[in-house]
Image (tube, rainbow, N blue to C red):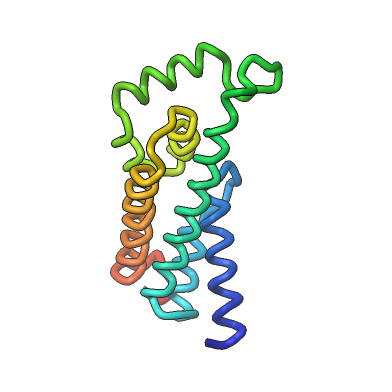
Length: 151
């Protein structure tokens, strides 16, 4: 592996990691561009993107584990009413809602999973399935339709 490939993979990892947080990053575009440029083997792009995005969600989970102690402070990002709604929603849909964590709007679910103390092994399993599934779909789309320059 050369420096150019390592740099491309590091950039993909950073984009995927950041996209799992509140940062407005589009790791799918980075993945598609690297796939089209044949910057690295597709299987390696898939693993790096999936690992980065899953690890970013783990950071959200850890934040959720500790954030509730700050509830009630003026700067806390959610009101008691919003927390009650989140608790009710998570109570209704439960851990299975983590299978939606692939969607851009669903990153807060990974924080909620930490707040409500979802067992880590279950959290990691469901989030890894969801995040990896999204990147598998992006890779397939890039290979089969023309939104990706080389596809």
